[in-house]
Each structure stands twice: as C-alpha cells, then as structure tokens.
Length: 419
Image (cartoon, rainbow, N blue to C red; front, side):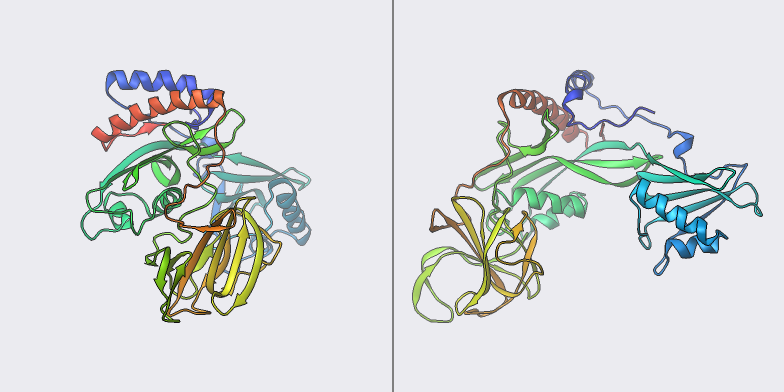
C-alpha cells in the first residue's frame, strides 16, 4: 500500500501540484481503495490462538499478564522492555487493547501485541529462552481531505451552523481556535454569512477512525473575509497563513474563551454596575459560569497573580516588550501558575468567577499595548511565524492548487481528495 502523504510536506509539493492539476483537468477527484499489509491487520492467524483484552478500569499490566500465566520474572522483564523500547509505562482503561497469542490453547504465550492507538501497535516476542524483545509498528493511514460548507441562519451560532453543515465537533473546536485570532464570535456572526472548512479524515480498512488537521478555513466576517491555510515550511515548521502567505496565527487572541457572549464592551465612559458612576471600562467582559477554564490568550510570563478590590482574583501576563493581558474576577487560580511562571498560548491560568467588584460570574479581559489599554476587539494584533521569501513562493503555488481542489469539492460535496 502506498503510504498516505502529508499534503503539507514540501518534498511532495511538486508531485501534489502536478497530481492535483491533472485531477482538475479531468474535473474529478479520484478515490483510491487500499489494502493494509497483513502484518498490520487485526485478524487471527489460523496457526495461532489469539485472545484480545480491552483494558478496563483497575487493570494493570502486571494483573493482565499474571492472568495469562506469565511468571513474575517475565512480567518484570516485559514491563521493562515496554518502558525502555516503546515508552509505555501505563495502560489506559477503555482505550488500550492487548492481544495474547499462543501456538495452541495449552501453549505458553509466544507473542503479545499492545495496541495503544489505531495507528500504532507494539509487538513483543520471545525466543526459546523466553527472552523478550519488542518492536513498534506504525499503521499507515488512509487520509482523505473532505470539504464542508454552511451558512449562518437567523438565530444561529457558528457552532450550530457548523453542526448542521456536518462538521465534527472536534474540528469545530479547532476552527474556533483559529478564527478567534481574527474574529469575535459574539459580534462578528450574522445571518447570511457563509463559511467552509477543508479537513482530514483518517480511515483504516475502509472505516473512518478519527479526524485529522484543519487544512483550510474560510469565513465571511464583518471586518472582511478570513481565510487560513495549513502549510509546512521547508524546515518542517507547520503554521496557518492567510491568502498572501502572512502568518494567520496572531500572538494574542481577541477572545480567550471560545463562543463566550460579550456582556460589556471596551469603553472610555461606562456607568459602573456596582459603583454607579461613569468611568472607563478598560477591557471586555465575557459571560462565563463560575469554574469555566480561562486559557492564556498568548504565550508569555506571569507578572502578577493577586487580589484587589476591583479585579478580585486576577492574573497579568507579559507577552513581549509591547503587550500584556489581564484576566480578572477569577474564582480561583490554576495550580502551578505563579508570578514568574512561563505559560503557553491556551494554557489554563485560572477559572471564571465573580470576585471583586462584580455583579455575576464572568471574565474581564484586557490588552495593554505599550502601557496603554486598547480594545481587544479592534486592535491590530501582531502575527507570528511569517514565511521567508522562498517558503512564501512555495506557499502561493500550493495555495492556488488547494483552492482548485476546494472549488471541485464545493461543486461535488461527496468527493474527497486522497492524500
């Protein structure tokens, strides 16, 4: 079987360009049927007796091996081999599977196959001296790029419209994370807006196993159409870029909590709901039930983690020499997030609450640029991971080919691109 190729691999770009160009000329996208190598098939060999155990809650490797009649010394040896050679030290309940193979029902175990995922299995074999060795086998994927599109209807949220379009929940979450750099899902979503997503589906033996990456996304936003493409640079770095090859992932997100409703906007003069007089509202308030996880809007270092009368429990993060963000009214802080802690984008730093001067649970979010508060919904955010000249040229070639594929799929929604 031909190994499924990553559409983002620059080494395969030329082949992709010509291959898809031919596909476009024929105005059809072909379906390739493949068979997996027998070594990777989960079937019983007629010359062996095989039993399969799905790891349950409370199961341990020692317990399962002992039930199969293995001695204590062999159990210790197998555990050490799995840890050192395959990096497996624990088993996951209701997920991992183990196959035990014997020559006959009464024979000792000759092979153990640990299956930690649909795409990986670890085979342990023993010689005549009962010495165990293992090898890891990566299962080749049948990866297909599929296209889904939809339209926002009156009263819709993007999530509801996405579900109606047939986009899986996990893919929708990924799309939220991407578009949150450019959009405010509370204010930028209107009836009549159209959107589309190109994403991967992974198959094994003709059956869908899981979803892969978002390859491209487009949304007709209020501030202009947003398009993002996933692309692998020559050095292997993967990122998302706009139509012109500029970094689409910003250093900060406008909305830290996906799909949260704005209850109070940035304003230079707002009547404070508790104090009763007018003063500047230097951030944006997002409705969030108590306990809602609050992710960091960008990577940086925690410079404040404290309490004051106005903000209640709050965290302040410095992202670079120009930008800081502040998160207020938390019910509690995340563990291990303290002053001086380095956090990554999306890392949970605390949980929504109503501490300080607050009338109800929510997140108060601020962006400070060069010491001055700016509107998170309108400030121009800096992009990261821009392409160099050589990679940008290859990206533009790739984007034109991918757009051609998307056009074909949009006219034939049941087709897919074989990766």
